[in-house]
Structure formats: C-alpha cells, structure tokens
Amino acid sequence: MLILTRPEIEALLDYPVAALAIENAYRAVSQGRVNLPPVGHITFPEHDADCHIKYGHISGDPVFAIKVATGFPGNAAKGLPTGNGLVLVLSADTGEALALLHDEMMLTDIRTGLGGAIATRLLARKDGKHIAVIGGGVQARRQIEAHAALMGDGLSFHLWARSREQAEHIARDLAQTARITVSDNLEQVCRMADVIVTTTGATAPLVLNDWIKPGTHITAIGADAPGKQELETALVARADALFADLSAQCLDHGELSTAAKAGMIQPTHVTDLGDALLDPDKGRPNDAAITIADLTGLAAQDIAMARIILEAHERA
Amino acid sequence: MLILTRPEIEALLDYPVAALAIENAYRAVSQGRVNLPPVGHITFPEHDADCHIKYGHISGDPVFAIKVATGFPGNAAKGLPTGNGLVLVLSADTGEALALLHDEMMLTDIRTGLGGAIATRLLARKDGKHIAVIGGGVQARRQIEAHAALMGDGLSFHLWARSREQAEHIARDLAQTARITVSDNLEQVCRMADVIVTTTGATAPLVLNDWIKPGTHITAIGADAPGKQELETALVARADALFADLSAQCLDHGELSTAAKAGMIQPTHVTDLGDALLDPDKGRPNDAAITIADLTGLAAQDIAMARIILEAHERA
Image 1 (cartoon, chains in turn purple, cyan):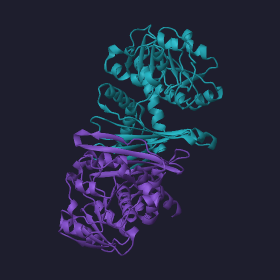
Image 2 (spheres, chains in turn brown, yellow; image 1 turned 180 degrees about the vertical axis):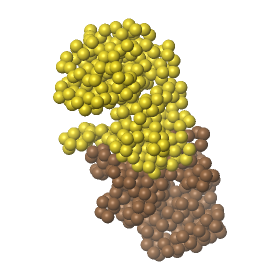
Image 3 (cartoon, chains in turn red, brown; image 1 turned 120 degrees about the vertical axis):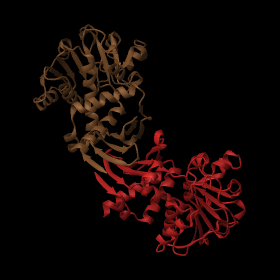
Image 4 (cartoon, helix red, strand yellow; image 1 turned 90 degrees about the vertical axis):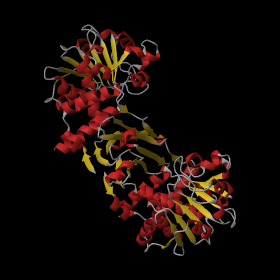
C-alpha cells in the first residue's frame, strides 16, 4: 500500500491535469455517473468538533476514494491546525487499499481553488482581467494560484482582507505566481473588478449589490454551511444567471440559500456547473450579464484529485 | 502517522487484553456510551461487490476509529482474498490521524472470534468442556483460538466442516493451540457437545432442534445478513435464554431474525451481551437451560481493537 505525505503529494500535483479531472468530475455528476452515498458524520460535543467522511465512485474509474476530514476548533489554542484530513484510495475492481494520501487537507484546499477557477474561466467575460479576491485565508491563496494557473498571465489580482497584514503576506508569498495588489477599500475593489472571488467565512454580507456593475462575474466560495453569507441577498436576486456546483446543495446551505429561502430566486434559475461545462449555451448569457457561481464542494472533486495523484505517482 | 502492517499488528496482539477491551466495549454499548453513526455503504454492481465504512467513538476514549471493509467475491477467481480492509485511528482530542492499521481484515476476524469466546465463557455451563465447532473457514479457526485463549486448557474441540479436508487443515494448523478432533458426523458432534459454535455461511439450518440436549450453549456467528441461518428455527424458539451482541441488529438480520419474523420469539426475550456482562443475574438461568448467543458484530469491537493495538505499540 502506497503512503504519500503532503510534500510528496504536492510534488506530484499538476494544475492543468487536475483542472481537467475536476471539470470531468463536474460533468460526471451532471451525467449521473457518480455514486455519492450520504456523507458520514461523527461529532465530539465536548470539543465542539466533528469528523466528516465523504466517499464515492465515478462510474468507470479504476479507483474509488474515501476522504476523512476533521474540524477541531480548539486546536488553534494548541498551535495545531483546526482542519485535518486524509484520503484513502481503493481499487474499484478488487477492493484492495491502494494508497493513503496523508495530505492534511491540502487536496481539499486545492480542488476548491480549482473549482473556483474553472467556474470563473467558464463564466467570466473573456476580456475580464481584473480579479478581486476577498479574504485572507487559505482559500484566498488557493484561488489566486488556481486562477493564475488556469487563466494565463494577463490577470491582475486585487486582494482585500479584513487583516491587511494577512493580505500582504499572501501577496509576498505569491509574488512569483501572480500580479497582486493589496487594497484597503473593499467597495473600490468590487466596483472596478471584472471578476470577484469571495473566500471568507463571513456570516453577514460583505459584497453589496450597489457596487456591482453589469458584466461582472462572481465566484462565491466561502459560504458552505448554514448561517454563512458573503453577498448581499439583493445581489443574488439581481444576478442574470446563477450557477452552482450542485444546485440542491447550494440552495440548501450555500451562498444561494438565503435568497432561495426568501423566495427571491427559484431552484429552476440555477444551472449546475457540470451542465454548463457540457453545453456552452448554458453558460454566460451575454456580455452585460451579472453571473454568480456558488461552490460548496463535491466529493466527486476529491475522488478526481485522488485518482490523478495516484496516476502521477505511477508515471513518476 | 503510524502505519502498521498485518504481521506487525499480529505481533502486538495480546488475547486477554483484547478480550477485556471487547467486553468493555459491549458494556459501553449497553450503557449508551458509544457513538455509532449509521454504517456507510457503497456498492459496485458490476462486480456484485461492496464497501462498508464503520466508525464510532466510545465516550472517554482518547481515539476513535474508522474501519473500511470491502467484499469483492470475484477476487476468488483472481487468487485474491474476497475480503479486505483497514482501520484508521484518529485522535478524539485533536482530530489528527494517528495510525493506519492495514490489517487486511485480521482485526475483524479476531474480534469476531473473541466476541464468540466472551459469549461462551459467560453463558456456557462452567463444567462444559466439549466444544463443537461447525464450519471450515476463517471463523472456525478464530473461534478455536479465542476459546482456547480465554477458557483455558481443559477444552476438547470437535470440528465438523462440509469439507473434511479443510477441517483437517485447521486441526493441523492449531495442533499447538488446542486439542481438536475432526468429525464426519454433524449430528453426533452436536448431540455430545456442551457448547456449539456455528461459523458457516449457511442459508438453511444445519443444526437441528432434536439434537440439542438441555444445558447446551450455542454461540451463533455465521448468520450476519438477511437470508443466512444455521440453527433450526424451532431450536431458537425452544431456547430458554437468548442473547445478542445487539438485539435490534440480530433480530433484524442475524440468526434470531427468522424466529422473530415468524413471531416465535419476542424482542423482550433477548438480552444484550453487554447487559449480561454488567449484571450476572441476566446470564445463564440454570444448568439445564439451553442458551443461544447470536453475534452479528459491532463497530464498538473494532474501535476497542484499534485502541489496544495502538496502546501496545506505544508500550513496545
């Protein structure tokens, strides 16, 4: 059984290959080719902590994957990461355990970044070069990396975070990867952006409807659980086209959920990203449209990441 | 992260320590101290195969465990084991992955053997020395090992299997562990036994009511899924006391299920093994009673095994 640590996995990772695998995973979900049983869940009430087990199989794949992710908020006080995890990869032909990818959540972070960049590349205007990134955490970093990897050299990133220090830290770390300007003015950054990528854990809207000009595309990453919201509800309602990695999931507990629960948008208004990838007519309607893609994360992405890491190891 | 292979795990295993941990796991289940979420399950219809994910936490334990077990019947034709598996052990305080026990199902086989021996030791007459073991597979072997380890030297095992060759193979392999006689006559073996341990995958009763004398104890291991049955239904109905590792589970799909569905036994007639371990008055009612213990396997046993292996490694 192969055991790979986080640095070993990082060395095997190829962004364009991973992006293709994740696009295909979104398509497979839309085609009904992914077997995704309900997520397993166990709680540790004394630590306000939990563990999720996501697993599934993309029909025809030689492997399947089981991802274990833990969230222990109390770790912060101990100087430990609050999130942790690993991915088991098993043969879909014999059931044998093939590999343990002890990635400590890195693959989840990267596939989330790639999901965002795939949505932006598909749905933003082709002439959109100014990308506002909102947030100062791991996902701000991963979104910049993924957008730079998938959308080429001409991009300008404008980074705003509640903590300017964290934003400057990211800008320094990624100086070789992307052109990044740190800003103190969230409104200004949103008003001038062609694309906005939101990556915060905000529980009240940060990005207001008034600030957004026609033609803007927004990729909303941060709201992945009930109670989280980054975009003003009126902005979600105003958007000309809404997209989701999985509409049922996003309408239930993603960025789209507040507008949906208020009756301001209808489930039929939301297009799954896989459908938009399969059919170009289902993407951006026109240059003036405001488009929003809400991503909450799919186990199909995890399976795709695990498979490409294993394949890269076999080739290496 | 610690990785242990099957031989390494085997070297760390101490039967009496494991038996104590498993007894305590049964007790913890009865005391409501075990958090056991629903079993995860994914199927591979093209191979008639599946994968189960069992996980949980015994309150107060420093670790929790996730067991992955696969069943791919087609492996037999490829010369591979049809069952496979591993156990992940994580910290219940920080969520960190501590160990991967790549036991290839060995821990499951051993904890099942120990569960049987714990039930027999608790419920059989103290003067019962003749143990009939029915079956020629892995569990026949594991039950003999566990009964010999837990119940001392005075036992005589009488082994019957559909294939005499397999029975003789087991008797040879375990010649240093136990006194084993191979028999061709199932009826005779059952009629003379003080204890009967059934370990087959039979789908029609093998052990008939007529053959069983008062005072006999039966530990029924084989029937762990709908459609399996080793004991004549009339024998289950006639038993003076019925026990189960988890009565709801055994009444649903264990040896007790046929009699329960026929209305021949009532759920209130079945005592959980943990309750019988906690309260001596809930065990064998008298020397003449026929007692049956039906074991279908609990994730609490898997958690207990994982913990003691990790503890043994820390001490080593």
